[in-house]
Amino acid sequence: MDKIYFYSWKKPYFEFSNFFYAPIIIDGKEYTTNEHYFQSAKFLNKYYAERIRLAKTPVIAKKMGASRDFPIHPDWDTRRIDVMRRAVYAKFTQHKELKKLLLSTGDAILIEDSPTDYFWGCGKDKSGKNMLGQILMETREKLKNE
Image (cartoon, rainbow, N blue to C red; front, side, top):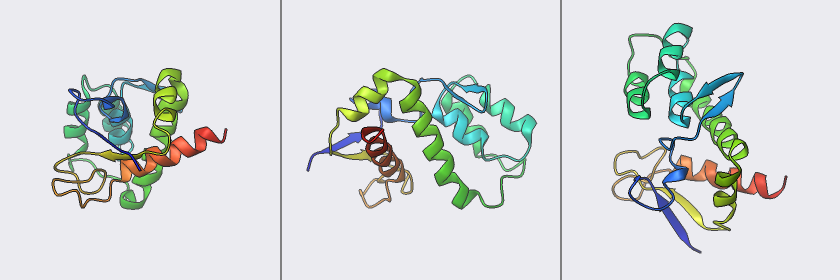
């Protein structure tokens, strides 16, 4: 089975990254990238969540999301999976060209080739959980059946 690795803006399939600029609307609010939505969803403090939503870049949103100056949801470790599913589904249903790209991957295994993230990506040694890739593949199957 084919494997598609994605991560860098310099390589194919960067569109699958949470840092790709594809605005999504969730609960009536627009988020510049999935990273903006994901990071803002961590926080109980609505003011801080809004600041993340409005961050200039996904890199800034991610850095702000790493802050613990404001409390995060106490169940974030379990909640984060559903938050990511929601973001990915929004991205690939709100952008027809991205939906087409995702569906064009057929049954290929999608792998976020992050050298540092062993949860969302595969990590440097490729032993990570690749949860973003898993969610993308789940979403692809859901879109095929809709």
